[in-house]
Image 1 (cartoon, protein in one colour):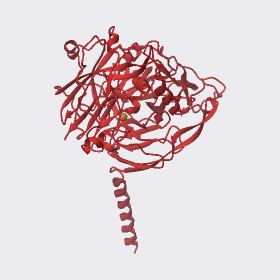
Image 2 (cartoon, rainbow, N blue to C red):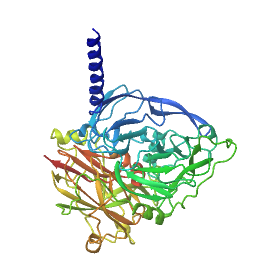
Image 3 (spheres, protein in one colour):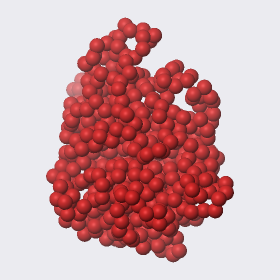
Image 4 (cartoon, rainbow, N blue to C red):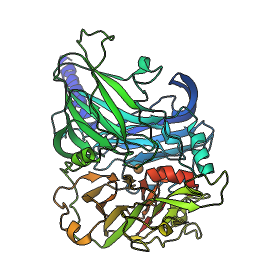
Length: 570
Ligand SMILES: [Cu+2]
């Protein structure tokens, strides 16, 4: 009897061992997301915002590389909505990507849709957000991907791991802000505050109580997963008296380097390690605008959170130390930061030969109109956004992916130009005759398996400015960046084909260019180009590129931003 018991115990232990092995297999994580109106008090006012599960920011999704996610979204709000999993490659699951009228029709009030996808060969920080109108102003959250069990970070594991989600807050209903801009054709109202994890922080009225606090002990290493979830604004981020070691961006590891300040464009993420090596006390972490457009209105406020040493005897009445932030137009700091990013551990090789050599101008445009309430852009125009002189128009009845998949004609055309229809001095003094783009739902077809290079060139139309461009369904290599007009001869010779940064969103330098490369390996895909963020598109197993300020401008135009879209043929 005793022997038998002993055996059972052994068996039990054996089973336990097996179980722990079992749990190291990929898992599927189930989430229930209920989109709803929730009263929130910020800047001395209570108003209803759209949230997921009543949380602002929304729930954090955490998984391991190799895991699957099933997220059931129920829409209890009064607006149509879709959710996008920003940076997830969506290999063979294009219908789950999320952009409204690109990969799916919106989830109507009362409706439900379940997003199912797998995380493949990605580690680090991504995020999710609404991809319908401007609802992502409040509907967003972190999506954290840990290494597979048994595998580890390429740096020593941090003691504390915390998302730092930067956002933009409007005192008004965000859909009204968008509608007003769409109606008038003028630039939309700028935000009233920036936020860290949903809180503006001590420098705004009625905000001290809620200020985000991160508690640390002396000696701790902290991983800050900085996500720029702002609707439009590039942001500088820094922590008083603490150096930041950059270890990852857009869910790709990089060769670590140390800096005092980082710049994060809308849609981008940056992982930094911070060592709590300063005297006990309170230190602000802070973010404010990087604004490269000349004479453009922007929100010049500063959001803060507090890094507090746990054993601190300092009372809350003593003020935290405030860090220095670069000037709003300090492009040199941005370049100094971004030029240090170098990738490690890339699974794929940088394409050295390209089959598709594309050149897209990215920037603003002005559509002429007759004076009136709907014509309030500069000098009787409406703002718009343009890529290769095309302002993208989103379908209104079915998604691009469905039209592609079911061969439904009349929804889009495939004549998006691979290079500007007219060559001009892009960043010079551009003739007014070139300021007005055409419009259309134009896509560009890519062969499956082709190596693609896209030169993204800013223009001086209206003003030069930096533009965040996002590619759905891909991580791409940033092989070169520079100022002025891209020169195929001299600039190509300087490309980094050894350890270029890997990203899903690139900030094209103000009055400059960036060159990205990727292999079109996400089959059946369509790829849509720089759209205003809210229109970000992709077809098929697609990828949309999105641009940001145009987002702003486009929002204004009523037409979507410029579009380039590509479809991969199986
Ligand atoms: Cu995305």
